[in-house]
Image (cartoon, rainbow, N blue to C red; front, side, top):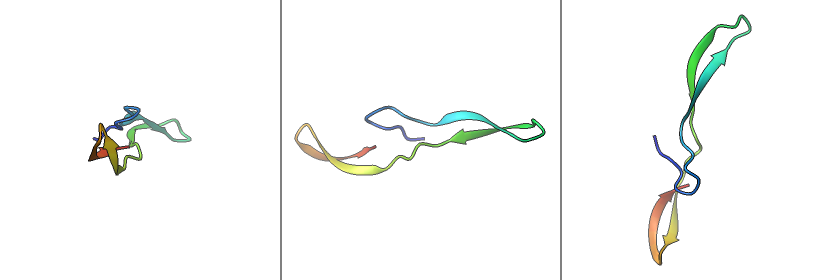
Length: 48
């Protein structure tokens, strides 16, 4: 999965917990978008 180039945010793992306390695995995905930016004077695409 992609990571943010600015803050390094990536996928987080955890569990869904139901009312009866059953637990199932799940993931939270970051809202990563590819944007065009100027880095060191050159135009490039970065994940933010």
